[in-house]
Image (cartoon, rainbow, N blue to C red; front, side):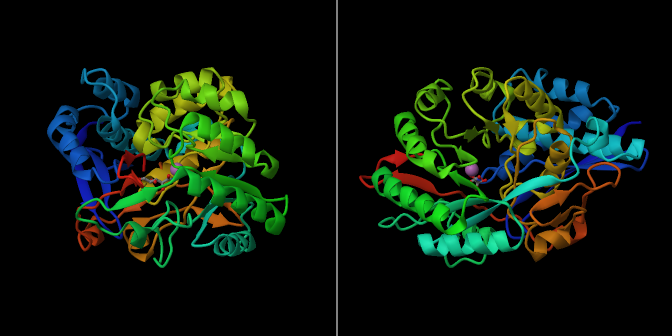
Length: 405
Ligand code: EZ4
Ligand code: CO
């Protein structure tokens, strides 16, 4: 079998997605997600100019060799653009292998470790009351885990709060230039303690609570927050600090037993190697699209399992339904799976472009049993939603200093 053609399609059914379609001479095709939010066209150029020409005529069944060829063979290893390009191809090759074998991808990985995949939903409000009423709505739908985010009083906008926008897709919008947002650690810390105090009071002790700091705190501030939140028994505290320097998490870990999660921006196992082997984190949140595909995620999961670290793949709306399908296969297989982030199966336009076969009910997802990834992409419908330049916001402290968004 040979790769005959590889098509890279960018569409914007509410937000930009970069979709890779690998077509074989046997009439089988595979799909992959290569979306990097706010940097989509860089991945397209990398794929079209530097990857696609090298793969035409190769046997798509040699997934590992193609992965190594693109990773080691480029000399320039890692980085979000390179690894998203590799991921897009890799997912498509697993999809093809499943279709050849007549088996869903989770079966190729080793089969089911569980019947269904536990999900956590989001609740983000303009006030603590608003957040908690949204959380109650989520629990009424059957979710047993919810991420709480709430607006910081005194700041114009806060990460994770949809506000008057319909959904996440409208929230990011399609911004021709990056918007700017403010940050104040002092104002934030006051809000977040009250949020979790009220949450336990109103939601009880049976629900798993999570929170995403989105890398806004220094390590010692994270340590302080983790300690402060111990009475509220979080499932995990996500991205409390940046870990470019992985030793940062030693500072946090020395001070708190609040479980820690990180990894949604990671491009490879090397970004989390020290965090995992020194047991500085509890959940690794790498995403198939950004960490190098299913081949790389499988390796990260196996490495993490040795150190009691569980997987909790990123589930943001800027990962396409193809990535979500890949995650549900990985989550169904991984013996050390923890929980899957879930923001819904997408708006109407997304659901018209991507045909998904995942059942979500009572806070859990059931993997597709179709051969391959079990997701399809309608190129014709995608044409109705052309690419629009769109950026994530940039964050500044109140004195104007650029900070972590
Ligand atoms: O801000 O995916 O946990 N989820 C997140 C996301 C990220 C976006 C960035 O593209 O932190 O909402
Ligand atoms: Co996050």
